[in-house]
Structure formats: structure tokens, C-alpha cells
Length: 417
Length: 118
Ligand SMILES: Cc1cc2nc3c(=O)[nH]c(=O)nc-3n(C[C@H](O)[C@H](O)[C@H](O)COP(=O)(O)OP(=O)(O)OC[C@H]3O[C@@H](n4cnc5c(N)ncnc54)[C@H](O)[C@@H]3O)c2cc1C
Ligand code: SF4
Image 1: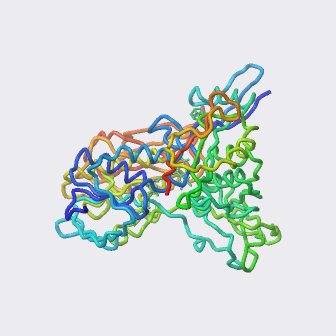
Image 2: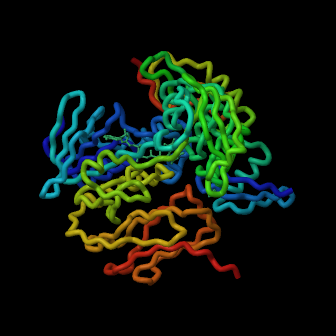
Image 3: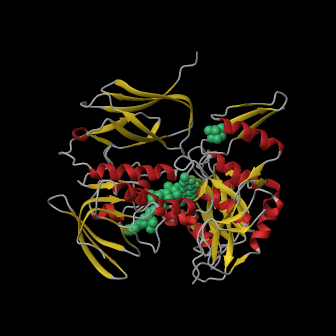
């Protein structure tokens, strides 16, 4: 039975939502998870490869095994609505949130004091990457191909070409090869791979799958079914070099074009979005500009490690349990080596002793020091032998000062002696 | 000879060098990198996850894994065996489908999801 009021409602039952719910149980009585699909577990259910849980469980688990462990932690008195669609969300004058959703039982209307968004991310759609030519069957996103093979047990095709070298694309290259398809190659428009080096090794090199950097797909061919694609070299400005165009026969094109946080729920609440992460702008308390609305996991920004995702769920639940005073924000700034920092701002009136800071760098950097400054005084520094754009860094930083005007991050190259 | 390799044990992906004359590994942030480098040069091993068919239309395939690493060269032979399995009764995550897989003493083929049945 769905109640009329909740202490906290969590939208999304993936690893972020599950850990938020388990942690929330320590602080709240009435908790509800609203999940759109027919089962809890999120994207992990289709990630059958291993590599999950090394920090959280100290073992290498597959996606479904990790999800199972998180689901097993849920206390029975936590309400779960499956196959549930939220169609109305509103922040009320007293800062409660009004929610309407429907499931198999019908329509539900409720009020919650706190809301945690954990609805994950989506793949950039094929339309968001411009490719000329026809619109034949046989073109899939990496996630679609993963669902087809790992959940439905169907091979998308026999001769596959992969565009984009993100981790999902690399993992699919290996899966397709193991399942008997031929992967002609992985084509990446940038001059460095987007996925982790470890996946380049164990997904491509192990199976002699070539990785073509500074190359892209310029055209697709075939009327009903995909027959071939044209690939082309690009110059340093990522402009296609027409004379290098080459046609390759294939029946499947898999586009691994990167992930962006879901925006459908945040839009309903008028949550401010960051142009850099494409996710909501939050304070160090995982709170959006809408009071009592918190975000965690890939709905916040895209994480590489599910262990980090679970951590953010727990943190969001913790901050949701606090009685925050009137918010007062200062913006976080950073230097040119950094792509983005989360949180984007500090709520100076509600500052705990330690805050989480996540960031990514723009390009590969070696032998550098990250410095975090408050009002131009260094409060934290750490050396890194190497930093890579695909690897997000998540730190828990002690705040030596509670009142300040400026928080700034910079990544500096260490001087050679 | 000096071998250059990437440690694949964890997402850090340390760039390792292995000097086989001195039997010395460099570049590893933790001890697991050292054993990885030595094994990788001698006889590389890998984990394997895969899918097996079921008779149930609501779950046509279910995910499985090997409980331990096997030699890289045995991966395709392993896939052949896994391809032929069909599960025809409900089973649980962690259940063993084949014990001592490919005659490896310490390797079982196990389920990583429940087979719920219809
Ligand atoms: C292909 C792939 C490979 C990966 N490989 C690794 C790896 O090797 N190691 C690793 O550590 N991490 C890996 N990750 C990352 C990790 O799986 C994700 O970071 C993690 O699953 C994100 O968790 P989440 O809870 O934020 O989102 P999700 O798992 O996406 O969960 C979001 C949930 O919200 C639900 N939802 C969405 N919208 C709504 C709505 N409007 N209403 C209700 N519910 C909704 C969804 O159905 C879903 O259940 C991989 C990710 C992918 C996609
Ligand atoms: S050496 Fe250790 S830290 Fe580095 S990749 Fe290997 S396991 Fe990870």
C-alpha cells in the first residue's frame, strides 16, 4: 500500500537509489522507492561483465551480483513501487514535494518531505550525433546492443563496427566477439580513447580488435538494412578529411556516444542544470536549488564506478536527514585543466566538517598536484602521477575554515627538479 | 627484455614495466600489479562472463561467470561449452552449473542471476 505522506521518496531503483534507501532507513521511518522498470537494480542488470564492487565489497562482482547485494540490504518496511511512472512533481510552499505517479494498481498522489533523485543517465541518442545517409535497420546505441544480447539473448548482427571508444562500446566489442560476431574495429574521433586503458587491453587487444583514433563514420549505406558505412580520418580540429574516406561492408553499427544525466524529473521541478555536467547544479549537501530535493548517482553526473554511485546515494540520504537552515551559496571555481567540479557551489550556512568534491580533467596530465584553496589559502593538496579525462576523481575534503568567500580548485604540473 | 603492460586488475590501470632478467616489476601502485605482470608474461589468465539459454520465454538467457580465471587461450573453447547449455528449471544466483569447468580444479561455472521460471 502506498501511503499519503513519506519522510523521503527516492525516484530510481538502481544502485544510487538502493544505497540511498538503505542509508535513509537509519534516519527516516517512511521511505518509498519509485522505479519505472519491472525490477530493482538499474543498468547493472544488463552489465553482465565483472569489475563492479572492488572498493565497496573488496571483490570483483558482475553487475547483477552487485545489484543483488544492494537489493538484499533493503529492509522490508521500505515501500517499493515498480512499473511506476511519475507524471507530476511539484515543490510546495512549505518545501514539501507533491508527487503523482501511476503503476499497475492505478494512480497515486502523495506528499514527501524530502526527495532524492536517483534516476540515472541515458545514452546520447543517435540523432544527437550527425551522420549522413540513409536510416537503415542495424544501427544501435551501445546500451541497446547490450540489452539485446544480455537480456533478450539476440545477436544484433554478424559484422559490426563500433563508433566511439567509451567503456560501454569497448565492453560490447568483447561481448560481440565472444558471441561469435566479427568486430571490424572501434573508431574514435578524438586522438585518445575515452574508455579506461584496462578495457582497451582486455576488450580490444585480447581479441585483436583494432582501435582507430582520429577517425569517424561519415556515412551509412543501405536502404532497409545496413550494408556498409564510410569511415574517414579527421584532422586536429576534428574536421573530416574527405580524401581519406573508405567504405566498409558491415551489417551492424554500434554507436557508443557517451552518457548524459536524465533530465525529465529535474525539468518538472525547475532544477537548475549545469552546462558542463548536463546534470543538476548541487551544493556540497547534494541538494539542488529546489529545497529538499537531492540528487545522487548518474542522475547527478556520470560516474565511472558503481562503488562511487552507491556512495553518493548514501551521502544524499544523510544530507536529506539534516534540518538545513536558510541556504546561502558561493560558487566553486576551477582552472583550465579541469572540465568540471561537483558540487558547483557551497552552501555556506549548512557546511559540515568534510565535503565531497568530484572532478575530471580536460586532457591527460602527468605528475601534477591538485590544490584546493579557500580564500587563496591551500586547504588540501594531493599529487597524482597521472590524471586522465575518463577517470573521475572523488575526494572527501576536510574544511579547515567555515566562513569564506571563495573555493577554488587547480591542477598544476609539478616542477621538475 | 623489458615488457610494457597495463595492469588490468583494477580501474587504476597502472602502466607496468617488467624486466624479465631481473624479475622486477615497476609502476605498480599495489602488490597485485606485481603478480599480474609476472603471470601476464608467463601464462595470461582472464575472467569470463557469458550467457546461457533457458527454456523460459520471459528470460531467454541468464548471465553466468567462471568463479576463477582461466588461461586466455582457453576462452573460446569455454564459450563453445557455455553455448550448448540450456537451463530448464528454476535456479538461484551463485548456483553451480558446471563444476571443475574445462578440468580446472578450482573453476566452476556459476549463475550471476536467478532463473525464476515461468
Ligand atoms: C555499459 C555500462 C558498463 C559499466 N561498467 C561498469 C564497470 O565495469 N564497473 C563499474 O563500477 N561501473 C560500471 N558502469 C557504471 C555503473 O553501472 C553506473 O554508474 C551505475 O549503474 C549508475 O547507477 P544509478 O543508480 O545512478 O543509475 P542506473 O543504474 O541507471 O539506475 C537508474 C534507475 O532509475 C530508473 N528510472 C529512470 N527514470 C525513472 C523515472 N522517471 N521514474 C522512475 N524510475 C526511473 C531506471 O529504470 C533505473 O532503474 C557501467 C555502466 C554502463 C552503462
Ligand atoms: S597495480 Fe594495483 S593499483 Fe595498479 S592497476 Fe594493478 S591492481 Fe590496480
